[in-house]
Image (cartoon, rainbow, N blue to C red; front, side):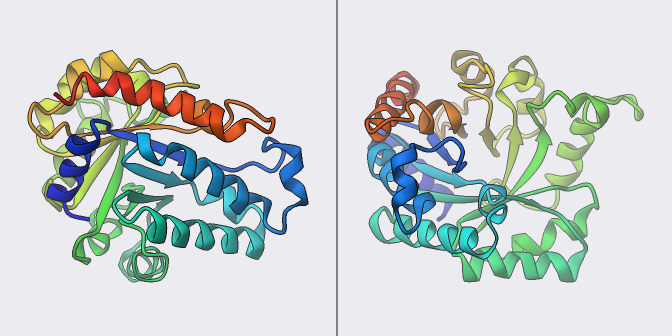
Length: 271
């Protein structure tokens, strides 16, 4: 999916919500455990319920890898379902890969050519040769971890060893490798006060923003400092607050209600 296509979807639907598909067998409604593939059935119902209110889905691959081959089969079925039923939705493989050139190329082929994801999250710690191979695929995106919302982010990302926090160095350096047409950044919503400084470094790149919802991030604060006037430039991800809104038979409807609530708030910024 191109940048223009993504922006068109956002403006048409008046939402920039991304729904995280992080299925946990211990949390999904117990009646689904009787299904041949509980993970896929859970995802399918969540996808159908929330698709009208979002422009992207983001399966976190750890929640599938944990169940071995059957979990990966569920992931593949989930992706195929999205691509067939909702082809205009942006699909992010949240895999956080990052290795040297040859390995990165194979990761890229796995997620872009095999799984047919539109984007993949990348850890840039090993430098340019851990990111550039992902930028060589037309219509695909590398989403580079910059400033995350977890408590441990302070261990490295906020360290000022070079007279500036490491995350700023990551943004300045990596933005030279790709363009706003094939590179995004992960910036946690719980660091909303830093969005103004981040936009000064990467004014045109899309930002994938986790942390709104269960982690306590504030949508208005993120939009105040992170929004790009004409292009929006944000994908706000919510996972647990939506997909686990209920663990009963109404779970899909409850997810739709939460997704619509966020989408309605976002519509104010899409005028």
